Length: 278
Image 1 (cartoon, helix red, strand yellow):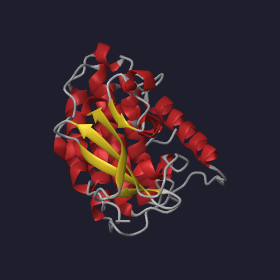
Image 2 (cartoon, helix red, strand yellow):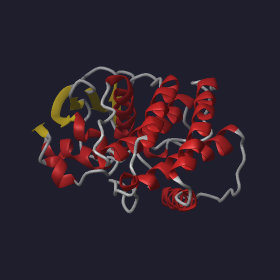
Image 3 (tube, helix red, strand yellow):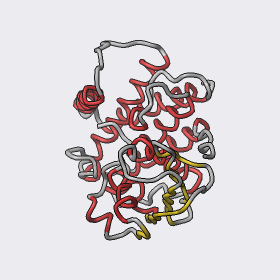
Image 4 (cartoon, helix red, strand yellow):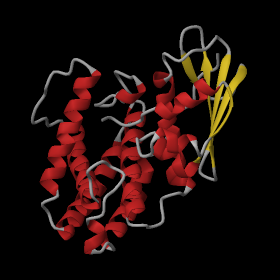
């Protein structure tokens, strides 16, 4: 079976994405800061606080190798619980700040985060593995792309909440989709299939593309090119694709907007794929 797709380059995109975030936040009204978002129980300000918190934690833990605590993690459930607790603590801490201070701290942290990612050897081992892809050790390029998807989709949540144009430009959105698709083999690890079966996932729209999941003897593999007999094909509009992978839309609502051909059970399993922790 053919090898999978290559690395995703995102380190150079952080400055552009962060500039869009600062410009967005600087233009918000007092009422817009308090609007609810797709993130459960989080307002626009809470999501902005989360973005600041994660910037500072990456700089501290990944760049500076500083850990205030080092709990033993024995399972994925324990990792999720830890991340959820740290996220809640960070949002609780930084929601106390004024919007102006919050923006100012993001302006301080963002270029330092961008510089950190730009300086990494993409092929070297990352300080953290991409757990939602089933990895126990990841390359820097993958962990960096994962961080990019986090910052992209949370900013998109803010934009939806305040009814501002989204970040639906191919340069910034396609890498997010490409990274999310790396969750497919792990998410499909128990899905049925015979060796040689091929599932095609299409994201429709100018920012989208096509991805292929092929069945090997005992597992599913993400393929750079289609190979085998296509048994299922699912097409997802780009407007909801990011929400499918981040728990931003319920499965029934997503099902009403996607197109399925062939083995429906196999195709629809994509709606349960999760490319975030928590």
